Length: 130
Image (cartoon, rainbow, N blue to C red):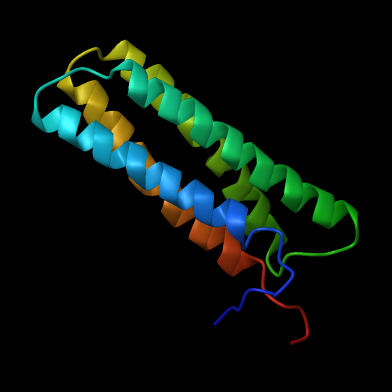
């Protein structure tokens, strides 16, 4: 079992904000999909704001690694990090390609995956030797 360090760069307010933003956009997109609406401006703006939050989280993680901190599972950690920052742009492109209710469903699905990846990112940043 892994544990997250108290001073972990991927655990804290930025991670929490990222998760909450992602879930809010997911709910908005789900409502739009159920109402048979295509992705709207609010979903795209939400994806943009989510991407900024995820980039901030990623920069904090990279700065911590540059400062000498090390994740417990570096390969998995950086894989999750790349995946995490790729999710909102992927959702944006796919939703633009599918301007129907299914575009909103795509945004919803991707925004439900992002919090899971944030949690996995936290789990791979275990305390070394602890």
